Length: 289
Image 1 (cartoon, rainbow, N blue to C red):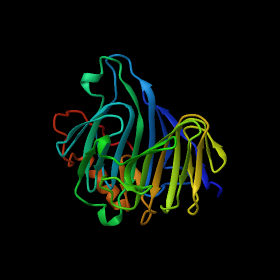
Image 2 (image 1 turned 90 degrees about the horizontal axis):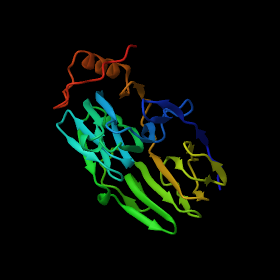
Image 3 (image 1 turned 60 degrees about the vertical axis):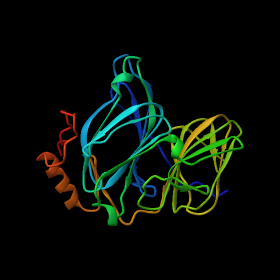
Image 4 (image 1 turned 45 degrees about the vertical axis):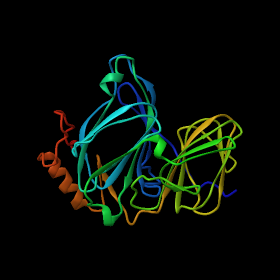
């Protein structure tokens, strides 16, 4: 088996009731394929009546991807979208030249003390689509390709992998797969994508013969099939794809190929020139620079 290329450690932050572990951007790797931001939320359970309340905020130059293992979130955006997401579904929001959204625990779920566990990622858009019109796609779990064999269950979240392709509207070659392995399960990850990462959500896992602790990303070498083995039940996220067509700047919620685009987005949010989210009255102000 080829050696692994790098291991990315999590940076943990308490957001008031739940922990978030950030893996990207990292000091050694700003991106893996088009993925420029990778957060692991939870697992957590809120007190009765509480939940997530991410107020309206803007994005440019990326697609946000929400994928849950447990719990539910209610997405609202400046296109007028109102969409509940549950485990196994995909919310894929294309920011392009600019969109505003909020994510909150649905009101009907709060009384029971709702759980939250999932992955939030940002996918940078190629130059040709960086200023595209904003959009939103919701893909229920049943619409995503699934593969089940020999102690391994795979759900293709976006892009293509293992002979299947998801209907998620990607803009470049993308690898994004949710994988669960039973104890003794093995998964061979082929070198069909230019850049590949494996995030260990949980379980006793070895990758290319080396033990990898939960909450770490292994960036795989560019060539060769890599074997993953699980000594216990395990959950993984495989991600990556085509290398991005140039560097990207990242500041707050903005991703851009130039400083000028960042400054324009800052000015538009500061001056309330982004479209508003219907039915929302709050917003997150521009951070102090």
